[in-house]
Every structure is written in structure tokens, then in C-alpha cells.
Image 1 (cartoon, rainbow, N blue to C red):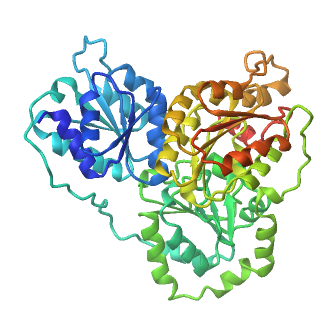
Image 2: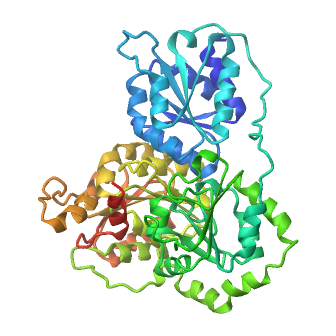
Image 3: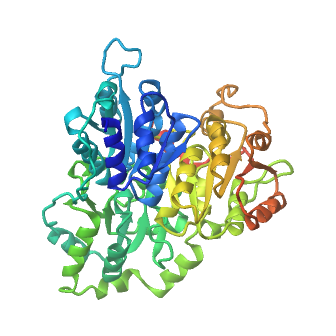
Length: 543
């Protein structure tokens, strides 16, 4: 048995079920070893797409994703998607063949590359192949993106036959969380708000029970949208996507507890959302995250769920009735029910004969689509509309590719999400710029024959730049384009394609939804470009 085969068997033995990639000479044998051991290989059109597929897959199903690429350019082609995954702390192993000879045209400094984007680096050794591959998988399972170097000369080395056993992924040992100061802060608060982020995605139950115990309202960062779906005290997304009611209530809080959230500029509207008088607490498993985006009054180290459970264990020793009475009233419950979604916020419809208002489009789609859905959002001027107007059933139903703010990752991420959850309708929300960048992966979408709806918010421009620079009189020829028939492009790839300018044009979507959905449907929605997006104003302030 050669090292490449050992690596494939070990990764499959640890639980790897899918591997995404583009196969070349350097990763041919390790990929085939994974397939022979029972993993499913999903061939992408481009390594960049494969990286985003693995990322979207891992985020949606919560399992470790695998990416397999060729040495040299295969790795660099995947770099943007790899960076997004690393910044999102996606559990991912990148099988990266390594040309170690400095004069090789394929040589790159893999450890330096991984370090540059915030990923971990492991390397397989000839005499410890099973141990090294297993260690990489276990590191990913604990929440890291891992580049696993596979030196070409090592891959072909004969290794000892391997058949197990598989070590379990042990949790990272942590000390018992010190919750007394947090408990005191909660006890003193009369208007507490919990804001849960990416690090709290697995902690819905203890957080909602603790919120019930202390009368807190619930909100999330965009990366954790859906975490509290269905809860009557859910304010949904904080920050730039917050409804007027959510912004009002968070602005009245006297305690804000950030659970697995670093309270970045998006979540806090550059610090303006949280009142200066509020006590701010940050709970995170990584002490390096404390205070990275704003000062906090109290930091609590530990896994979010464990900290919440520890506080719950002590809440019974104290009276919290006065807290709940201050904040959670029947009148506030009614306001959240009636005004807590963007669907209920009035606006002036700016649709005309040729274009549709993106809010009107999003609301109509929300009515049409089945509730059991996964919404994947690319980056761009449009991104708030699907994020704010499309409901999701739970936290696994929303994939937000914004950690690196790269345009063009949404389509491939949606394909990975669709592989992870074929039982749900996957909706890829893209701008026209991101679609054109990534359209080649429609080939993969057709091959997979998975239920996939692609919605293009097409304003014939890089809209963020138009709305940022246009009001100051700057020339916009570099960021505006002639109208393009994107639906025809989609049909050329083998998808169904539909152009939408009015709500009535969406009727074919209803028929597609009622059918087998074995061909992706791409909607080229010609959206009105007259208005900018307030969340992008926030974004540009951060540059």
C-alpha cells in the first residue's frame, strides 16, 4: 500500500463522505483512494469552484469538507475559496500535493501560503502517513481549515498496510468556565440582549433556555441567521441588516452578550448599534477573539454551549422575574410578531416597465419557495435583499460567503450546500458580476442534477461601486455594462433560464417548483439600479 492510498483510507475512515476537486497527476491517486474507500467525488469545473463547494458543504452539514487539487496552480486557483473558508473557521481539509524541489515549476511555499490566509498546515510523512492524515482531519473537525501537504515523492512511497483503528475526535480540553461575573451581569440587567454569532451555531437550545430564564431578547450576526428561527423573541440579524425594530430594541439594551461573535463592524454598524451605556460581554472559545473589534466589559472563555449551560445551572439560585417583566411584555411580543421582519416594513416600490424592485422580487420569491430551503448568498450590492427578505428554517439553512468579501463564491458554495442537503431546495442568490465570474460551475450543477434555483439580481453593473462613487460625479464606465441575456447563457450550459422584469414573470418558477427539479433554474432578474444599499455604505466605511 502506498502513502497516497493510506491517506485516502484514513480520511474516509474518519468519516469523510464527499470530496470536491479537480484531479490532476498530483492528486490522482489520493482521490481514487478516497473513492475506493467509499467517498463520493464531486468534480468541479475549476479549483476555485471546488474550494467553495467544499466550504458550502461543510457549513451546511456541519461535517468536515474535503478539497482535492493539483500541485502548484491547482492550489493557487483554489486560494480565494480557501481564504474564505479559513476566515470562516470552516472545518475543511485541503489535499495539496507538494512539489518540494525549489526549482520545480510547481513549487510554492505551502506552509507560508496557509499561514498567509489563516489556515493550519500539516504535512504527511512517509513513515507516519496514517498518523499525519488523521491528525489533519481531527484538527479540521475541531473547527480549522487545514492544508495537508502531500509531497509528491512521499505519496508514492510504500507504506505499512493500514486498516484502523480510527481515533475519535476528542473535544479540546477546557477548564470549567468562570461564569460568576457573567451571572452577576445578567442578574443586574433589566433589558438584556443576546447576539449569537458563528461560534454559537450549535448552541440554540441552551441559549434560548438561558434567554427565557433571564428575559433576554435574541439576535444574531448574519453568519448565524436562522439560529433562533421561530422563537417569539427573535429579532433576527443585528447590524446593517437589522430591521428598524431590531435596531431600536438593541439600542435600548443595558446588557449585550455576544455569544461566539466578535461584534465586528457589520454586526454593530461600526459600533453605533450598541448604546454606550450598555455592559458588553463576549463569550468565545478563543481568547484571542476578545476585544478584537471593540472593547468589552467582560470576557468569558469557553465553548458557547458549555458557558450557557453553566450559567443556567446557577440561574435557579437567583430571582429573575423583574428582568423578564421589564423586557418581555405581551406588547413587545406583538410588536416583534407584527414588525420583526423586513416583509412588514413599508417601502415605495421602485419597479418600472423594464426592471423589478429587488425588495419586491425577494418578497415574491419568499412567498413562492418552499419553507424547507437553503439560501446561499454571494457578495455584492444586492446581498441584503435575499438575506433580509428570504426566511430560512434554521441556522443550517443560511450560508453567507462574506468573511473575505469576495464576489463570485456564491454559486459554487450553493452546489456544496445542495450536495450536503439534497432534501432541501437550495437557492443561490447572486449579483450579475458574481454570476459571470462563476458561471462555468453551471456545468457542475447540470451534472449533479440537484434541486438548485439561481437568482441573479442583475443591475448590469458592479452596483456597490456605482452607488458609492456615482454620487460624487466619478466616471462609471469601468463598472457598468450593457444589458446581457444571462438566462440565455444559463440555457447554454443546460439549465432552464428565465428573464424576470415583473412579478408576473415569476409564474414559470411555480411550475418548475412543482416538477422534478432535476435541471437547475436560473432567474435573470433585471432589478432597478436607481437605489444604493445602505448596508454597502456601511461596508465602504470600513475600507
